[in-house]
Amino acid sequence: MKKKSPSESKTEMTLMMLPSDANPKGNVFGGVILKYVDLVAGIVSKRHARNTNCVTASIDRMTFLKPVYIGNALILSARLNYVHRSSMEVEVTIEAENLDDGTRVRTGTAFVTTVALDKNGKPTEVPQLVLKTADDRKRFKEGYARMQSRLKEAGKI
Ligand SMILES: CC(C)(COP(=O)(O)OP(=O)(O)OC[C@H]1O[C@@H](n2cnc3c(N)ncnc32)[C@H](O)[C@@H]1OP(=O)(O)O)[C@@H](O)C(=O)NCCC(=O)NCCS
Image (cartoon, rainbow, N blue to C red; front, side, top):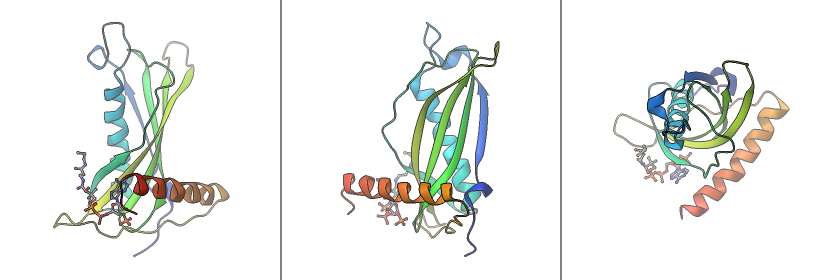
């Protein structure tokens, strides 16, 4: 299977936050942000592992560092850090942009693990990552360490 670089699947998604996304004070619900985190991680995974069904196995604990309000643009930047046999770690950086003055704040980072499934619903091999830059190699090494912790926590190793 041909190796692929993280830049081939990286994805940025921008959405306007609407009243239906928020509580009565205008704060966007964490669950709404998580929905889009899950969605963008799914797109990255599908772009990497074409022709498979990519499902979310886990999302690491995440903290909402700053509020996102109705009328803000929610900007999600997602890329692969680490790939094993069928599993992929996608890092999603979450920012809120005030569309009036253009200021942007980082509101959190999420690590999503997805698994590629074949037509029978069984985990299936995905392309390995080409690590071109020092940053790619650093992310891969850190992704490996996080995956080991996750699997320990899940009682898989
Ligand atoms: C994710 C899922 C396919 C894993 O199935 P499984 O029977 O545990 O499969 P395996 O033990 O063979 O593991 C398959 C891969 O998943 C990884 N994995 C399994 N559980 C994991 C977890 N909790 N966190 C991270 N990775 C996990 C394994 O490390 C393995 O990766 P590898 O092939 O790269 O080495 C299965 O738990 C599932 O279908 N979950 C529901 C997914 C879903 O519907 N998500 C949407 C939200 S409800």
